[in-house]
Image (cartoon, rainbow, N blue to C red):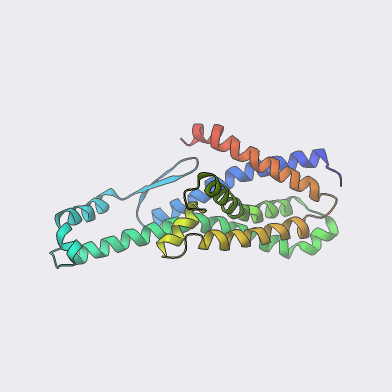
Amino acid sequence: MKIFIRKLIFICIGFILFTIIGTISHEYGHILTAKYLGYETTLHYASMNYDNSEYENEIIEIYNQNKVNIANGNEFKDKVKYEEGVKKLSNDALLIRIGGPLQTITTGIIGLIVVSYRRKKINRYGLKFFDWLAVFLSLFWLREVFNLFMSIISGLIDTNGSYFGGDEKVISELLNLWEGTFSCILGVIGIVISIFVVFRVVKQPLRLTFITGGFLGGVLGFILWMNFLGPILLP
């Protein structure tokens, strides 16, 4: 198998750009959900913050004034308001967490649908610009694969008793599920989709070039955004 240098450069640049785009758009998934729920939001290069301090402080104040009654399950003046507030804050936290991965996998599904629909034309005429765009979008699923493997590796190195992390772990915990539930499910789906795209959509003799460019571009994009551009543009 041969590596085509010009196409390698194109693929590498594509993965660099879409690694950055994927990171930002993932955070916008959180942000759009939070804004819909009425929160103020702030975007950072690899995270976002949401705030509704006035309402949250009101619930905290009720708690501080009724700690004993709450602990003992007794009645108190603002019990209904407090319980509804706790439920709302908990549900909002869950929905906002879901927003990021949902955006990522939805984008990946759209890309997958497009490349699946165009497979016959791709097989006959090769990958055109629009097809390449769909391929990169479908591989947004690689985020789930990356998160799964990096979480497991981090768990093995840190020996902190947890082999999962990120939004998927928090979502699982908020739903009272095993912490690795969504990490494993989405990670496995991501592996299957990635294998399909690489081995069924991207044909020989371009496959080795694509895999090499994808690896280099993904690593370079991650380093470039997380360590250089991101902290400057979106501190």
